[in-house]
Length: 238
Image (cartoon, rainbow, N blue to C red; front, side, top):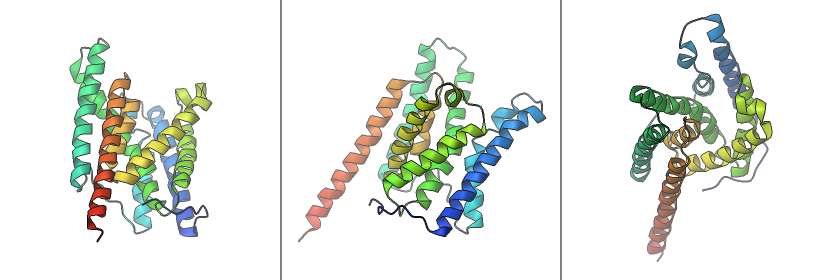
């Protein structure tokens, strides 16, 4: 059920969101600086900026005595089916995209594919799971606008080619991504589904056909589930 249309936050929610963003920005900025302080190969891949939203969401939830449940796969049957199909599509589609691009180092392809998903899981725990739960009583528009603004500003905690080269295009991507991912999370409550969608955009080389197939399957599942619920509700009406 969609949230109400209220835009005024109560103090507890406003405080949690402020703490979350300040921590997420600060941690990511610190991890961005870390490779310069520790001149070790691969350190920036281990201490990725994605840990900012991830650790911030966990810490703020802990301090607020509302701990997050880190469940990768949903307990709901139809959502779990979506997750497994989406995961298989992501892995196969990314592998094929790399092979078609002429890459033959399969170990490296698998590593970067899994890393893209790992990174997306870190980010999405904060931007979709934490914010989605905290803002669940507010309107969908409020969720999208607030998450888009915070997500966009957070990207300036570390150098990013798109934010610097074409900020207007990046704003459009952030708003569209915030709307789509917020809707997926609102309907499924699945951390993995939103992470897979995010990873399909981040993975290199990007595979538009795989992303479109993933979106079509996910939206199809959601529509079928809504239709099924409506049909069951109508049969229960005396």
